[in-house]
Image 1 (cartoon, helix red, strand yellow):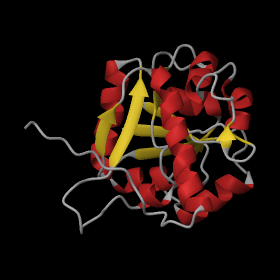
Image 2 (cartoon, rainbow, N blue to C red; image 1 turned 180 degrees about the vertical axis):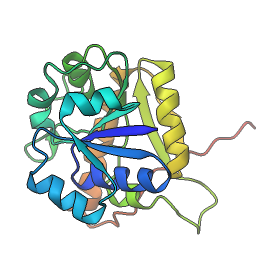
Image 3 (cartoon, one colour; image 1 turned 90 degrees about the vertical axis):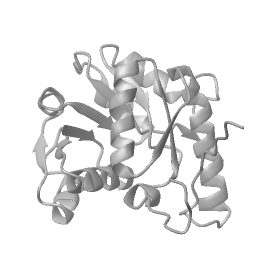
Image 4 (cartoon, rainbow, N blue to C red; image 1 turned 180 degrees about the horizontal axis):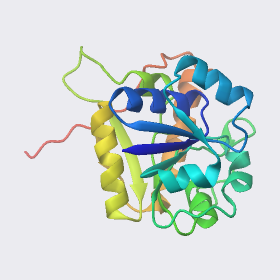
Length: 211
């Protein structure tokens, strides 16, 4: 598939790099193809295309937004997605690692409002980029879980397939309104790992039993 990335920092780069090596075509969607972030990304992986935002969206099968949340409104306003899947990898973070929208609604729901003709799926936010670079835990007989949510079943199926390609087990948590809880999981992970000194290779697992 052709995947467009709006945002190519730690999270965007980790996902794009892994998915490109798995056979997907990557487009960096950026209003300035000569920006420092684009040049740095291409220096590490020169195989990617760079296109303006709308052109990249039109060319892609799936679009990822992996920017700081504070710039999402500026970047997404006025863009046309025409029913495509938009994967929200952003996190609204406020002072003291609090929820940036005061837990009144999720950042993913804001993204959906900004892109009403997209099918938004929340994914790839509950860990740091280290586990997107490498999802392999050979010492355990279980895959790390990637929690997702969204309102469109087909869009979630697309993301589920990407999760499988990346080595994750998908846990579909339900409608997009569940994103608020996933964003709180992100804050928990950040507080334990970035602030609490736990290994960034800490992941969530899902254990099921039919007994």
